[in-house]
Length: 344
Image 1 (tube, rainbow, N blue to C red):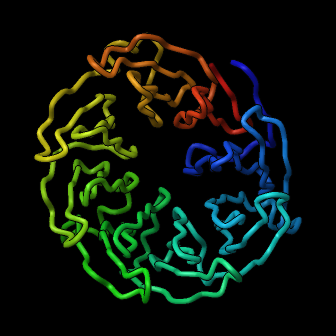
Image 2 (cartoon, rainbow, N blue to C red; image 1 turned 30 degrees about the vertical axis):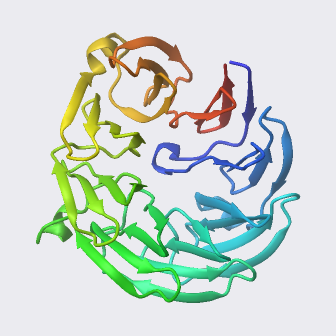
């Protein structure tokens, strides 16, 4: 470990699905348990911090989502606020209130902000002043996603999966539906309570998406048609390298898939080598050159050889739940509920 930055504890950190925002100049933006947003440099020294919440709101277990563009940090939260901060000094630029709380990634393209709220509504805002430009209402049910919903932008459309498993492609310009592909059957409402989706990844016009219901899909981004499907349960963001897809399933298997046809090229049981550490499940992974780093829910980190899937080293990072790893300039950064740690 090289250094660390401590902050006030985030309650229920493991269910926040919060991602560390890394800017182009390698600064890091995150938040603490009271909703204070802080910007630190890659050495973990504080640049600025800002809190826009009232005393009452600070007690409501705030969860934040981030993106940035044009010198603005765009923030949404579970209190239904969307606002913009100045990237340089953290000063607030504008603030708006939505009709429903947010629980989705934020994407920005051509001065427009795209994100989804708890009512499965895709919202489009102006980055200049926060004015809502249009919205697209997908199916709204009493089922709310337990994981942050994922969005990608490709070929003038925004593609997102809602809490009932419908993959929607919407026009960036006017919010019109281009195509929709359901991924669940007629019993969606009952089964969706426990279904969690991975982040969406798009590569060469192919959408890759999976869930914990043994659905691992490849879809055509132009038409939404399903190209192939595998029976793999995974809630982790897949990584695509050339023609190979890397993922980890809920049972701790590292799986390599042929992107073109969905055939499984290799499956390695990580748990076979780590039973003595009392591991229950992975929390995320990152592929870095010839190694894969896998974080675990008891605070361990595994270094895995990409070529053969064999676990090479184990590192004790924390005694609690840790986030997936992040890599900046050959340094490893890992989040826990009250600190960011930097490692060689």
